[in-house]
Image 1 (cartoon, rainbow, N blue to C red):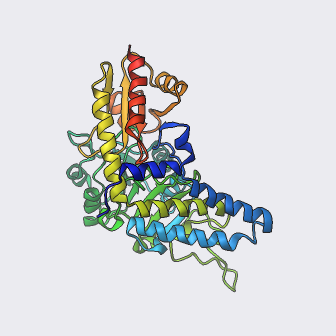
Image 2 (cartoon, rainbow, N blue to C red):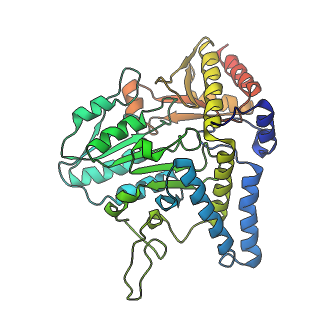
Length: 398
């Protein structure tokens, strides 16, 4: 178990984060603030490419890519061969989904109510063209996806169960491992979108029981934008045929035949930004050094404080569901459009997010929400920053 993150340690981490010096940042779920060391890792690789040539600098960059793979495997309790470094959460998720192959009439995809809009778009295009169906797993009274309801829906036509672990539109945390136990009992492929979870929650892919898990570098990990992680369970790999390959994912043998890699690298491209790989490797290293249990404990404490104090402001409604919650805090201010709330706070030097129906359409439509304001915290967030955010919101309600 990691030790608590002291205030002195937080101050030290903030001092090594350029963005923390001039921004009151409450959009860590959109993209967090990278450390100076992460920026320097990216710049060092770019400088090597500029001075000795991009191809010639590739050897060092590939070493950092392998470090990123090793660090990610440690973070997720996976094997390095089960990790692909991708260009983002959606590209990794979409590549894995496409690799399932064509869909047939009558086949069923079961999704949680909180599924990411981009994943839904991908699934709907495939299902509509083939006559397959996408069905929503009921949620329980707390709003989380209900494993018992899922079990009651299953039959031989179900070909995929998909879950977004932490929705983009609020602090709810879905029961990923409980859903995984149902999927494993029935041998149904199980995809987890962990874009918001990676770097914020302790993740054990074995416990989660998933075949695919995707994550983003730019969110809780504080890595560079344009980087993601794709976990592919080794025993599931043979069931996946990538929609396209290149000389990295399927190198040609002596006879000129493409040979698919026998690891998650079959979802990687030879055309990759090694500079961003260097930044991702450093961000992963930093997260592991701090400790994910420590990160989770601090984010949970900060988010609880923020929710409680937001709820005490007249005219503010906190919209988070679930019992266990994340560092995403959704709210609305009565009489004010969430986008105008976001713009007003930006003018005060405070950044928050604002999500519309397209982010989590099934849940937003079910709950009658058109737009939400979202303040998402990091282990870097301080009580002083919370105070300034609350004062800015109070000013809007007067």
